[in-house]
Image 1 (cartoon, rainbow, N blue to C red):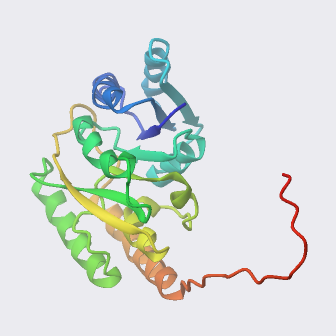
Image 2 (image 1 turned 180 degrees about the horizontal axis):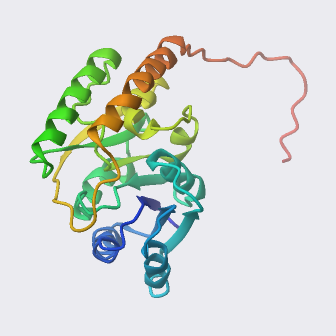
Length: 250
């Protein structure tokens, strides 16, 4: 029985996939039964072929494929829907999220006596290995988002996260959802924990995002998430006794 699932979205990451899979296996095998779900998001290189080849010698590796690119949130969503574990962890497919950090994220959710109200453990990168322009753009975007949503997260763009599968699937889904998971989990009443994680330089290939592209969609996304939080109303229902006979045979 699978205890937890790792979901890794990939688009054109043929140069990074082998090392990433090896690192995930080494980091996760000591934690218990697990699976890795690689979601090939419409790659036009050898990413899918390499993932399938790696899976032939790793029974814990599964491969899903989108016929065309749907974006990171769509890939994560597909992976979580297919996940067999009650706990799911994610990391980016470009090799910049070190797999060795996964146990740190999973431990609070897998531990005996884990807080049942803890829904998400979010990684926050330290010592980022990105270009100066990318770091500055990310810092500005995070500051604006934190001020608007009050999610107490300084780095929501970090791909390293771990969460309860059913809690994630109950969230409203939309494109770019992965950037707002701390705010959305908190919106649903879950506790969110933060863990500092390392960051590595990209091993091969190039980023699928641009600073301008992130900024363009970020404005609309931020307004939409702020609206979702404002309109959320939690009401706890209580069963009313009817006095009818109850059949407990089932």
